[in-house]
Image (cartoon, rainbow, N blue to C red; front, side):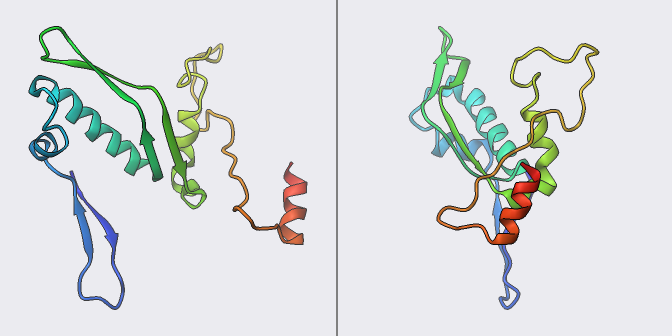
Length: 149
């Protein structure tokens, strides 16, 4: 996986970067108490989940509980997440808005699709972000909000 820039202060002589760990490192550290036969499934799940987290610019993502059901020979497994909490930052909407909309589409949610079967780029309902906690809107913001609601 590529390196991701975490912080690069303009006055510093270095940049802090993060390199995604190898499959072996994930298995040896995160999955050391898990039967080795299901490591491949869980490493794949963790890697794909991280890819979505980065690609969609989540600021928070929690899965609890995560249920892993091994097959009878413990050579593979089904992975189910029973509850998921996630946070998005509104400032990333200009880059990720289309991805977020596709994820909210009727097809992605398992609902009936359109009659002609076509999928549009902005397929889901608009994302709504609450006002920052504890902050009152300025008169100008309140006026704009009134126009668009």
